Length: 434
Image (cartoon, rainbow, N blue to C red; front, top):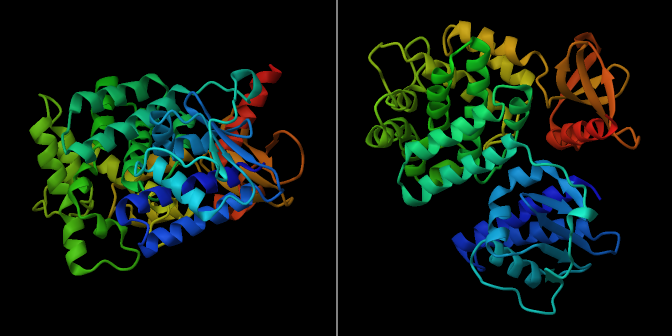
């Protein structure tokens, strides 16, 4: 069964749970979200058999097959299921709207249990480690989830504990942040929690850029802390402004423009000696290289870490979907950075970033002249390579190629693939063969 179907269901479940909590069952947005959940559940059981989503350790499984990327993308659903001691969710063919609404309410925290005898069953099936496609959860993936939890905690309590955030950054550095694996992890996104995911992705990209630039460990620790907290001021911005799907009103835009100052104030209030630079990055990350942007710094040049964060912030923002526009390809993002080099962004840092990620960063989806669709893998000594997808061949087929072979770059949705899961599965298969 396709991982994308499982991912679509988890996304719909998350969205419906959120809408139920915020708007109640009578809200029109809730009705639309539950309808989307119905469609996703029907797709999972379209062949007439039940679908079982299980939770083992820190990962989701669909009918005993690992949902690698979805386990991180829908971390809040995973944590909610763990909290409610839900080990498996079984969807029966024809599960009704009421059953699915009850499930969304349970996962969203609006109710405590499901009525018995419906089309959705809890903990009726068992997934033992010996029966599933068990893979170790990477330290990067585990730390990614921990960092999301830290940011959610700030949002809920409005209390910022920089020691906890620094510990997460240190775990990232110990787990290999700055490698090709961390660049790939930085492609994980969640539309409804985009501030959290965006902040973690910016942290990973900033650490990678800092390592590529040759920063020392103590500098990387401060850069990572600053990048992870660069948007912390957004937790005080009106949620309606962040979720607007069209052009922002003047009032919404005024709200959004406050977040650098609010973030800097929050960080300064919590900072220990030596951590003040994180407040500067929060304040300055929307400052342009030519002195424009906001807030007005009176012509003062922003800190190096602010300029580094601004480069990776733009890259991540362009490659992620937003309510008012779809995601764009890495090639588009790199072109935007180049166009703004010397005006919007520090030109030396733009060149360094492009040198680091290359024309086709790991996780990019490209079409080759031979007709193959390939998920780009981290380079090896032989040059560029990728995993061929959609060719009907069982297992993962690695293919070497050169830039001249690429005829188009695709969005993952266009290709119908989850790049992180494709590459993780290929790596797992290669490890088993060794």
